[in-house]
Length: 370
Image (cartoon, rainbow, N blue to C red):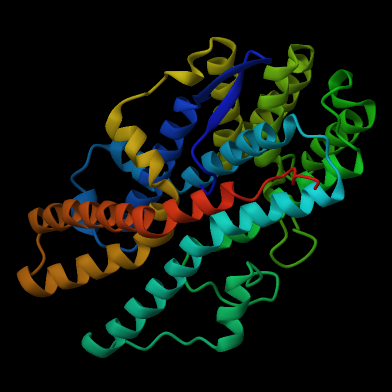
Protein backbone atom coordinates (compact mmCIF):
# COMPACT_ATOMS: atom_id res chain seq x y z
CA UNK A 1 0.00 0.00 0.00
CA UNK A 2 2.92 2.14 0.54
CA UNK A 3 5.53 1.28 -2.00
CA UNK A 4 6.56 3.55 -4.81
CA UNK A 5 5.61 2.85 -8.38
CA UNK A 6 6.91 -0.56 -9.34
CA UNK A 7 9.94 -0.43 -11.61
CA UNK A 8 12.09 -3.33 -12.75
CA UNK A 9 15.47 -3.82 -14.37
CA UNK A 10 15.20 -7.51 -15.18
CA UNK A 11 13.29 -9.87 -17.41
CA UNK A 12 12.90 -13.40 -16.12
CA UNK A 13 15.92 -12.88 -13.92
CA UNK A 14 18.35 -11.46 -16.46
CA UNK A 15 19.46 -7.83 -16.26
CA UNK A 16 18.59 -5.39 -19.01
CA UNK A 17 19.20 -1.71 -19.50
CA UNK A 18 15.51 -1.01 -19.80
CA UNK A 19 13.40 -0.11 -16.79
CA UNK A 20 9.91 -1.58 -16.89
CA UNK A 21 7.04 -1.06 -14.54
CA UNK A 22 5.20 -3.84 -12.77
CA UNK A 23 1.89 -2.91 -14.38
CA UNK A 24 0.06 -5.86 -12.81
CA UNK A 25 1.30 -4.92 -9.34
CA UNK A 26 0.06 -1.35 -9.78
CA UNK A 27 -3.32 -2.67 -10.92
CA UNK A 28 -3.67 -4.95 -7.90
CA UNK A 29 -2.71 -2.06 -5.66
CA UNK A 30 -5.52 0.02 -7.15
CA UNK A 31 -8.02 -2.82 -6.75
CA UNK A 32 -7.00 -3.35 -3.13
CA UNK A 33 -7.34 0.33 -2.26
CA UNK A 34 -10.76 0.60 -3.92
CA UNK A 35 -11.93 -2.57 -2.15
CA UNK A 36 -11.03 -1.07 1.24
CA UNK A 37 -12.81 2.20 0.37
CA UNK A 38 -16.00 0.32 -0.55
CA UNK A 39 -15.75 -1.86 2.54
CA UNK A 40 -15.56 1.10 4.91
CA UNK A 41 -18.67 2.69 3.39
CA UNK A 42 -20.48 -0.53 4.23
CA UNK A 43 -18.86 -1.04 7.63
CA UNK A 44 -19.66 2.53 8.63
CA UNK A 45 -23.37 1.90 8.06
CA UNK A 46 -23.54 4.56 5.34
CA UNK A 47 -25.27 2.36 2.75
CA UNK A 48 -27.32 0.08 5.02
CA UNK A 49 -30.51 0.29 2.93
CA UNK A 50 -28.74 0.21 -0.42
CA UNK A 51 -26.80 -2.95 0.29
CA UNK A 52 -30.07 -4.83 0.93
CA UNK A 53 -31.07 -4.45 -2.73
CA UNK A 54 -27.71 -5.55 -4.10
CA UNK A 55 -27.31 -9.04 -5.58
CA UNK A 56 -25.79 -11.44 -3.05
CA UNK A 57 -22.46 -11.82 -4.93
CA UNK A 58 -21.93 -8.05 -5.00
CA UNK A 59 -22.78 -7.74 -1.31
CA UNK A 60 -20.28 -10.50 -0.57
CA UNK A 61 -17.58 -8.59 -2.45
CA UNK A 62 -18.26 -5.47 -0.40
CA UNK A 63 -18.29 -7.40 2.87
CA UNK A 64 -14.87 -8.87 2.06
CA UNK A 65 -13.33 -5.62 0.88
CA UNK A 66 -11.07 -5.56 3.93
CA UNK A 67 -9.12 -8.37 2.25
CA UNK A 68 -7.51 -5.62 0.21
CA UNK A 69 -5.11 -5.43 3.16
CA UNK A 70 -3.97 -9.00 2.43
CA UNK A 71 -3.29 -8.00 -1.18
CA UNK A 72 -1.28 -5.00 0.00
CA UNK A 73 0.87 -7.11 2.31
CA UNK A 74 1.71 -9.62 -0.43
CA UNK A 75 2.49 -6.84 -2.92
CA UNK A 76 4.75 -5.18 -0.37
CA UNK A 77 6.71 -8.41 0.03
CA UNK A 78 7.09 -8.75 -3.73
CA UNK A 79 8.21 -5.15 -4.31
CA UNK A 80 10.56 -4.99 -1.31
CA UNK A 81 12.13 -8.29 -2.38
CA UNK A 82 12.72 -6.73 -5.79
CA UNK A 83 14.22 -3.60 -4.23
CA UNK A 84 16.83 -5.53 -2.22
CA UNK A 85 17.40 -8.67 -4.28
CA UNK A 86 20.39 -7.32 -6.20
CA UNK A 87 21.95 -5.61 -3.20
CA UNK A 88 24.97 -6.85 -1.27
CA UNK A 89 23.41 -6.23 2.13
CA UNK A 90 25.39 -4.55 4.90
CA UNK A 91 24.26 -2.69 8.00
CA UNK A 92 25.02 0.72 6.50
CA UNK A 93 22.88 -0.13 3.48
CA UNK A 94 20.07 -1.26 5.78
CA UNK A 95 20.12 2.14 7.46
CA UNK A 96 19.94 3.99 4.16
CA UNK A 97 17.17 1.69 2.93
CA UNK A 98 15.03 2.40 6.00
CA UNK A 99 15.74 6.13 5.65
CA UNK A 100 14.48 6.02 2.07
CA UNK A 101 11.39 4.13 3.20
CA UNK A 102 10.77 6.71 5.89
CA UNK A 103 11.11 9.68 3.55
CA UNK A 104 8.80 8.01 1.07
CA UNK A 105 6.12 6.94 3.58
CA UNK A 106 6.11 9.50 6.38
CA UNK A 107 4.89 12.78 4.79
CA UNK A 108 1.69 11.26 3.25
CA UNK A 109 1.06 9.36 6.48
CA UNK A 110 1.62 12.40 8.71
CA UNK A 111 -0.65 14.50 6.49
CA UNK A 112 -3.33 11.81 6.79
CA UNK A 113 -3.01 11.96 10.58
CA UNK A 114 -3.48 15.74 10.45
CA UNK A 115 -6.47 15.36 8.11
CA UNK A 116 -8.09 12.79 10.40
CA UNK A 117 -7.68 15.00 13.47
CA UNK A 118 -8.97 18.07 11.63
CA UNK A 119 -12.10 16.30 10.41
CA UNK A 120 -12.71 14.80 13.84
CA UNK A 121 -12.52 18.19 15.56
CA UNK A 122 -14.68 19.83 12.88
CA UNK A 123 -17.28 17.07 13.18
CA UNK A 124 -17.46 17.50 16.95
CA UNK A 125 -18.21 21.20 16.44
CA UNK A 126 -20.93 20.99 13.78
CA UNK A 127 -22.67 17.64 14.36
CA UNK A 128 -25.21 17.72 17.23
CA UNK A 129 -24.40 15.18 19.94
CA UNK A 130 -21.09 14.23 18.34
CA UNK A 131 -18.45 13.59 21.00
CA UNK A 132 -14.99 15.03 20.30
CA UNK A 133 -12.22 12.60 19.46
CA UNK A 134 -10.12 11.91 22.53
CA UNK A 135 -6.40 11.97 21.82
CA UNK A 136 -3.19 13.03 23.50
CA UNK A 137 0.15 14.41 22.36
CA UNK A 138 1.80 11.11 23.30
CA UNK A 139 -0.75 9.23 21.17
CA UNK A 140 -0.05 11.44 18.15
CA UNK A 141 3.70 11.11 18.66
CA UNK A 142 3.37 7.31 18.82
CA UNK A 143 1.41 7.40 15.55
CA UNK A 144 4.12 9.44 13.84
CA UNK A 145 6.65 6.68 14.53
CA UNK A 146 4.27 3.77 13.79
CA UNK A 147 4.28 2.73 17.45
CA UNK A 148 0.66 3.24 18.48
CA UNK A 149 -0.25 -0.46 18.54
CA UNK A 150 2.99 -1.46 20.22
CA UNK A 151 2.43 1.22 22.89
CA UNK A 152 -1.26 0.25 23.16
CA UNK A 153 -2.74 3.52 21.91
CA UNK A 154 -6.03 3.52 20.01
CA UNK A 155 -5.59 4.15 16.30
CA UNK A 156 -6.76 7.59 15.20
CA UNK A 157 -8.01 5.99 11.98
CA UNK A 158 -8.99 2.38 11.47
CA UNK A 159 -6.48 1.96 8.62
CA UNK A 160 -3.35 3.12 10.42
CA UNK A 161 -2.67 -0.22 12.14
CA UNK A 162 -1.43 -1.73 8.87
CA UNK A 163 1.33 0.87 8.58
CA UNK A 164 2.73 -0.30 11.92
CA UNK A 165 3.00 -3.81 10.51
CA UNK A 166 4.43 -2.73 7.16
CA UNK A 167 7.33 -0.92 8.82
CA UNK A 168 8.08 -4.02 10.88
CA UNK A 169 7.98 -6.16 7.71
CA UNK A 170 10.51 -3.91 5.97
CA UNK A 171 12.86 -3.70 8.90
CA UNK A 172 12.86 -7.40 9.76
CA UNK A 173 13.15 -8.60 6.15
CA UNK A 174 16.02 -6.20 5.41
CA UNK A 175 17.71 -7.16 8.70
CA UNK A 176 17.46 -10.87 7.80
CA UNK A 177 19.15 -10.19 4.47
CA UNK A 178 21.81 -8.19 6.26
CA UNK A 179 22.46 -10.85 8.91
CA UNK A 180 22.81 -13.48 6.19
CA UNK A 181 25.00 -11.13 4.12
CA UNK A 182 22.86 -11.45 1.03
CA UNK A 183 25.14 -11.40 -2.00
CA UNK A 184 23.74 -11.36 -5.56
CA UNK A 185 27.10 -12.59 -6.86
CA UNK A 186 26.67 -15.92 -5.10
CA UNK A 187 24.46 -18.82 -6.13
CA UNK A 188 20.98 -18.36 -4.63
CA UNK A 189 22.28 -15.19 -2.97
CA UNK A 190 24.42 -17.26 -0.62
CA UNK A 191 23.57 -20.33 1.43
CA UNK A 192 22.94 -18.38 4.63
CA UNK A 193 20.43 -16.07 2.96
CA UNK A 194 18.35 -18.90 1.58
CA UNK A 195 18.49 -20.84 4.86
CA UNK A 196 17.40 -17.84 6.94
CA UNK A 197 14.54 -16.87 4.62
CA UNK A 198 13.30 -20.47 4.41
CA UNK A 199 13.37 -20.63 8.20
CA UNK A 200 11.37 -17.41 8.37
CA UNK A 201 8.77 -18.86 6.00
CA UNK A 202 8.49 -22.04 8.04
CA UNK A 203 8.13 -20.06 11.27
CA UNK A 204 5.45 -17.87 9.72
CA UNK A 205 3.32 -20.97 9.03
CA UNK A 206 2.57 -21.33 12.75
CA UNK A 207 -0.03 -18.57 12.53
CA UNK A 208 -2.05 -19.54 9.42
CA UNK A 209 -1.95 -23.15 10.63
CA UNK A 210 -3.54 -22.01 13.90
CA UNK A 211 -0.75 -23.42 16.07
CA UNK A 212 -0.05 -19.94 17.46
CA UNK A 213 -2.63 -17.17 17.70
CA UNK A 214 -0.86 -14.53 19.78
CA UNK A 215 1.24 -11.79 18.14
CA UNK A 216 3.74 -12.39 21.01
CA UNK A 217 3.87 -8.64 21.72
CA UNK A 218 1.32 -5.83 21.28
CA UNK A 219 1.10 -4.74 17.66
CA UNK A 220 3.41 -7.54 16.55
CA UNK A 221 3.74 -8.39 12.87
CA UNK A 222 4.05 -12.16 13.17
CA UNK A 223 0.36 -13.12 12.63
CA UNK A 224 0.55 -11.41 9.20
CA UNK A 225 4.20 -12.18 8.37
CA UNK A 226 3.22 -15.06 6.08
CA UNK A 227 1.39 -12.68 3.72
CA UNK A 228 4.48 -10.53 3.24
CA UNK A 229 6.70 -13.60 2.86
CA UNK A 230 4.37 -15.04 0.21
CA UNK A 231 5.16 -11.95 -1.86
CA UNK A 232 8.90 -12.31 -1.31
CA UNK A 233 8.75 -16.04 -2.12
CA UNK A 234 6.86 -15.30 -5.35
CA UNK A 235 9.59 -12.87 -6.37
CA UNK A 236 12.47 -15.16 -5.39
CA UNK A 237 10.97 -18.10 -7.26
CA UNK A 238 10.68 -15.89 -10.34
CA UNK A 239 14.33 -14.90 -10.19
CA UNK A 240 15.39 -18.46 -9.23
CA UNK A 241 13.04 -20.99 -10.88
CA UNK A 242 14.67 -23.78 -8.84
CA UNK A 243 12.78 -22.31 -5.87
CA UNK A 244 9.37 -22.73 -7.52
CA UNK A 245 8.63 -26.04 -5.73
CA UNK A 246 9.34 -24.39 -2.36
CA UNK A 247 7.06 -21.45 -3.22
CA UNK A 248 4.32 -23.80 -4.41
CA UNK A 249 4.42 -25.85 -1.21
CA UNK A 250 4.50 -22.72 0.95
CA UNK A 251 1.51 -21.16 -0.84
CA UNK A 252 -0.46 -24.42 -0.96
CA UNK A 253 0.03 -25.02 2.77
CA UNK A 254 -1.24 -21.56 3.58
CA UNK A 255 -4.18 -21.88 1.18
CA UNK A 256 -5.03 -25.36 2.43
CA UNK A 257 -5.08 -24.40 6.09
CA UNK A 258 -6.99 -21.22 5.25
CA UNK A 259 -9.73 -23.26 3.58
CA UNK A 260 -9.75 -25.79 6.43
CA UNK A 261 -9.99 -23.07 9.07
CA UNK A 262 -12.29 -20.77 7.08
CA UNK A 263 -9.69 -18.01 7.24
CA UNK A 264 -10.20 -15.60 4.35
CA UNK A 265 -7.15 -13.38 4.93
CA UNK A 266 -4.61 -16.15 4.40
CA UNK A 267 -6.52 -17.52 1.41
CA UNK A 268 -6.55 -14.10 -0.24
CA UNK A 269 -2.83 -13.79 0.44
CA UNK A 270 -2.06 -17.17 -1.14
CA UNK A 271 -4.21 -16.41 -4.19
CA UNK A 272 -2.52 -13.04 -4.67
CA UNK A 273 0.92 -14.66 -4.50
CA UNK A 274 -0.19 -17.35 -6.96
CA UNK A 275 -1.40 -14.66 -9.36
CA UNK A 276 1.98 -12.92 -9.11
CA UNK A 277 3.75 -16.20 -9.83
CA UNK A 278 1.61 -16.81 -12.91
CA UNK A 279 2.03 -13.33 -14.41
CA UNK A 280 5.77 -13.33 -13.83
CA UNK A 281 6.14 -16.75 -15.45
CA UNK A 282 4.22 -15.52 -18.50
CA UNK A 283 5.81 -12.03 -18.42
CA UNK A 284 2.33 -10.54 -18.16
CA UNK A 285 3.43 -8.64 -15.08
CA UNK A 286 4.43 -5.82 -17.44
CA UNK A 287 1.09 -5.60 -19.23
CA UNK A 288 -1.79 -7.31 -17.37
CA UNK A 289 -4.63 -5.02 -16.28
CA UNK A 290 -2.95 -2.03 -17.85
CA UNK A 291 -6.18 -0.03 -18.11
CA UNK A 292 -5.50 3.66 -17.56
CA UNK A 293 -8.12 4.19 -14.85
CA UNK A 294 -6.87 1.20 -12.88
CA UNK A 295 -3.25 2.29 -13.21
CA UNK A 296 -4.30 5.71 -11.94
CA UNK A 297 -5.90 4.11 -8.88
CA UNK A 298 -2.68 2.17 -8.35
CA UNK A 299 -0.69 5.39 -8.59
CA UNK A 300 -2.71 7.12 -5.84
CA UNK A 301 -3.47 3.95 -3.84
CA UNK A 302 -1.33 4.85 -0.83
CA UNK A 303 -2.94 8.27 -0.44
CA UNK A 304 -6.37 6.80 -1.17
CA UNK A 305 -5.91 4.17 1.53
CA UNK A 306 -4.70 6.72 4.09
CA UNK A 307 -7.26 9.48 3.55
CA UNK A 308 -10.51 7.82 2.52
CA UNK A 309 -11.99 7.18 5.97
CA UNK A 310 -12.54 10.77 7.15
CA UNK A 311 -13.56 11.85 3.64
CA UNK A 312 -16.14 9.06 3.37
CA UNK A 313 -17.67 9.86 6.75
CA UNK A 314 -17.80 13.59 6.08
CA UNK A 315 -19.44 13.27 2.65
CA UNK A 316 -22.18 10.95 3.88
CA UNK A 317 -22.82 13.03 7.00
CA UNK A 318 -23.12 16.31 5.08
CA UNK A 319 -25.03 14.66 2.26
CA UNK A 320 -27.70 13.17 4.50
CA UNK A 321 -28.07 16.48 6.36
CA UNK A 322 -28.70 18.25 3.05
CA UNK A 323 -31.03 15.76 1.34
CA UNK A 324 -32.26 13.26 3.87
CA UNK A 325 -31.72 9.56 3.43
CA UNK A 326 -33.41 7.08 1.11
CA UNK A 327 -32.10 4.07 -0.76
CA UNK A 328 -31.65 6.14 -3.92
CA UNK A 329 -29.94 8.94 -2.04
CA UNK A 330 -27.60 6.45 -0.42
CA UNK A 331 -26.53 5.41 -3.92
CA UNK A 332 -26.03 9.05 -4.95
CA UNK A 333 -23.94 9.97 -1.92
CA UNK A 334 -21.98 6.74 -2.17
CA UNK A 335 -20.85 7.69 -5.67
CA UNK A 336 -20.11 11.23 -4.52
CA UNK A 337 -18.06 9.92 -1.60
CA UNK A 338 -15.99 7.66 -3.86
CA UNK A 339 -15.35 10.57 -6.21
CA UNK A 340 -14.32 12.83 -3.34
CA UNK A 341 -12.00 10.16 -1.93
CA UNK A 342 -10.29 9.83 -5.31
CA UNK A 343 -9.98 13.61 -5.72
CA UNK A 344 -8.48 14.10 -2.27
CA UNK A 345 -6.11 11.18 -2.82
CA UNK A 346 -5.02 12.58 -6.18
CA UNK A 347 -4.35 15.93 -4.56
CA UNK A 348 -2.41 14.28 -1.75
CA UNK A 349 -0.36 12.31 -4.27
CA UNK A 350 0.47 15.42 -6.31
CA UNK A 351 1.23 17.77 -3.41
CA UNK A 352 2.77 15.44 -0.84
CA UNK A 353 3.43 11.91 -2.05
CA UNK A 354 5.03 12.73 -5.41
CA UNK A 355 7.64 15.09 -3.86
CA UNK A 356 8.32 12.50 -1.15
CA UNK A 357 9.06 9.87 -3.78
CA UNK A 358 11.42 12.21 -5.64
CA UNK A 359 13.23 13.14 -2.43
CA UNK A 360 13.52 9.49 -1.32
CA UNK A 361 15.12 8.56 -4.63
CA UNK A 362 17.90 11.08 -3.95
CA UNK A 363 19.02 8.96 -0.99
CA UNK A 364 21.49 6.60 -2.61
CA UNK A 365 21.91 3.11 -1.19
CA UNK A 366 25.53 3.34 -2.34
CA UNK A 367 26.96 6.76 -1.46
CA UNK A 368 29.95 7.82 -3.49
CA UNK A 369 33.30 7.53 -1.78
CA UNK A 370 35.34 10.70 -2.23
